[in-house]
Length: 467
Image (tube, rainbow, N blue to C red):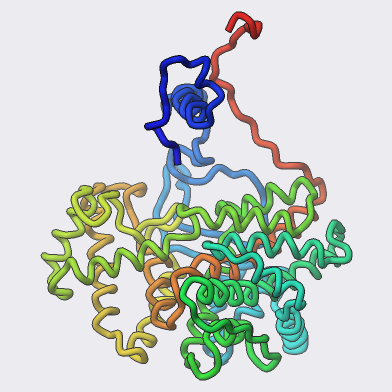
């Protein structure tokens, strides 16, 4: 951290090369040199954040992998809010989930196959693919020891470094032929849960002095159960825990090509770099608190509200406190209600609706009915409070997003907040790899290179002796 007490702005010549002063000088300078006024975006018709004026996303590519629907564009102009839809390879995710549930089976393995291939596997193909995943979960001893050596504060960073290290274990890492891309994709999807579980157990051992458990994945377990087994050990999770974790993996597996991390993977992939570099870039994007960490913020907010609101059934008390939050008078004074609103979904987030169905069953199993009832009431009153606060119009219409319930179910399962975002990556890597394969197989592929309008002033060179 900059020690401003050490900075003496007098006698600049003698102080110029001191680290603290140099950092201070550069920091003060970029206040103006790096500032871009918001009005310039409108003046030059630049789409800030790749968003149109109506808040819809700017079309920057084509995909067949996934689609996200939250509104319709009207012929006369403007947008119409519609119930949210999430589509995987042409199939509504609600149909996908309810299909798995009707057949009383888990579905993440099939979802990953669908995203990678573009079609639903038959029974023999699904069995073979599931076998490939579980066989690929095991890490070489050297890789395991390297994760131990990569001990750190953040599991997302450990995951990123571990993925980059997989390059060194790959006999053909730079090959971007379709066969090799599929091989690498399956290996990455398989190894993410093992890396995350090992990294957490090492973190817990180093920070809390707990026993270090390195459990090897089992071939007779599903993707979701193997993760819980490696995280918690045998007998420490239920059948419902496995089912609801499998559901969250399905719901987070893809979200179209426009979400930040997937777009990052596609941008990096368009350079024809190796798979591990592209996926590590996606992890770095997802780590950002504006992208992958929202469910942690919801959990923290929920814990606060359980204390701040005395009567969990009192609508007036809840509404009054939520209004204070929106007015930046309560909680962290950010003016936000975490888990409310989404960049695309307006009327409803289909992932939240599907997760809410099973979260209720989990609340009953874990004896958390009162907490869940409070969460449901917060869901209803938060949406109402936000829309009352913001006014009418499609840009003000909001819904509860998937983060509102995912943190609750993770905590109910007994999973620590340190792995909430890594679990997001564990699921989304299926979508990332599918989009990478598509990006590298366009008939007329081209490196992604958007344009930036320069709004800086022109200057003349000043000789060093005259500065």
